[in-house]
Image (cartoon, rainbow, N blue to C red; front, side, top):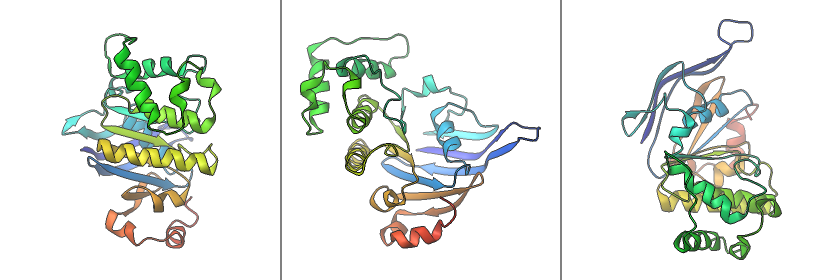
Length: 252
């Protein structure tokens, strides 16, 4: 479980551009949970994701992972148990390297001392089996450069790479915003499958309200640095898209 206790974050403190990005945030995320965060621009969604990733640190409060404080751990140390997928499919991959070499780089995430390039047949087979799970035949193209794949293919592959090794927390930062509807559905179905099978703690920021209906088991609405509304898994079962729009009118 990951728990946030009285988290506060202010940018540009003490000057006219001061922004109180997060205000006394309390939140618990359990194993095999998939929470979707929505809210207007500037509501604190990205700040919350950056805090979980270790890209920024809170001004006050605690972030506990299985009761151990991690709020001061930088992102390169959290990378052993946190992975993040970004909006742009290009981010997080090396376009000039082959698909196989990208998986080798991704596998180094959990190695704390030095980069380990794994050239073993077992590793290659693991990569091929992982890609084959997409059912698109991309496992036959592991020696092609990453740049040769479409945006949707790259995002699906980035998701496989991010979850290739041991992982506890998956952060999804508008992962389908740059994709067409078909590719977006493929990525979301893959994310749902991985989160469920691996029993991950997942958090996704999105502006697509339909994702709130189709995916996840909890919804958080943020406004001006606070969690304005929490929709539980039971409440979500009867939630309609029109109701959701009415809840978040002028907030998205």
